Figure 1 (tube, rainbow, N blue to C red):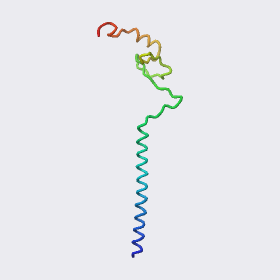
Figure 2 (figure 1 turned 90 degrees about the vertical axis):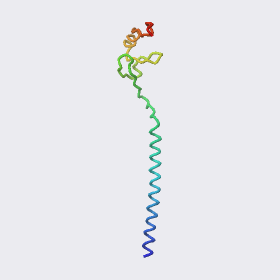
Figure 3 (figure 1 turned 180 degrees about the vertical axis):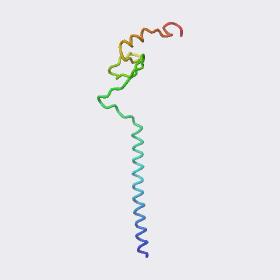
Amino acid sequence: MPRILFFVFLAFLFWLLIRMLGGSRKRDDADAARRTASIPPATPPGIETIAQCAWCGVHVPRGDATTLPDGRVYCSVAHRDAASKVATPADRGDA
């Protein structure tokens, strides 16, 4: 009988050791996943970012867009020119 209890106790210790080692690995994996999720992925080469036209709202690749020095983005030269022809309240003196 004492021999059986000894092996049961040994099996329990082995199970406890495996559980402790497996649990710490799962925690480490979860911590690593949480850390990598907070880092934004870098844009791979060959992928362009998308910008929205300030005039019509169409989304175009940045390489095809017309950008003004103040940061406004237009999908075409025609929309850039149309936006520059519209008088803003500050231009009319209403502001």
